[in-house]
Image (cartoon, rainbow, N blue to C red):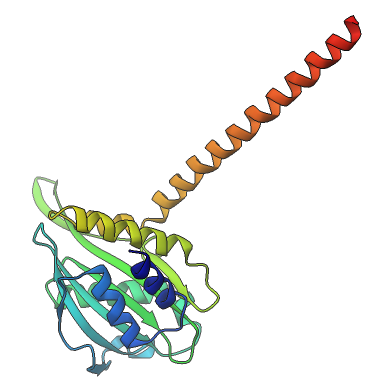
Length: 227
């Protein structure tokens, strides 16, 4: 497992490279069905102002029969990796719908830019009754919450540790990974909660130590006063 973690760390701390990305996918999804990782499709739709083109790396079916498309998307200009999340999210929605999939695992990158974005976008449908009629609405995961900015000089510790846990859990349980498991890997809210709990635990210990020290000093002063 240490070798796998080091491999993931090397990939996530490097600028985007298709071969490295394919290696990352094979580690995260060992049963992935590769499609055409070497075939770049230029974009000619309304998205072409922001997107150069894409590569359909592979498909993955979860144990609970959900389909994930795995893509690499080249953005046109430097800066789009960080500043065009809305476009990335909309394009991911298009890819999911065109593939009749449930979610997408996507690397967004720009040529010659050291940082790139690893995103998970999930499309759910919610059935509800409005004015006596059954209505279907789409729920798309927020692009900001479900992505990691990776690459050279980017702090990737959280992404590395969460993918490590994801792989370990997937190996231990044949019913995993589910879409929920993958969503949890990318959930910044969950990471924040875990960090807050850890922060509180550490500072609570420090506070207790501080109180014990203060009590010891007070007891010592009382002893000296009595003597």
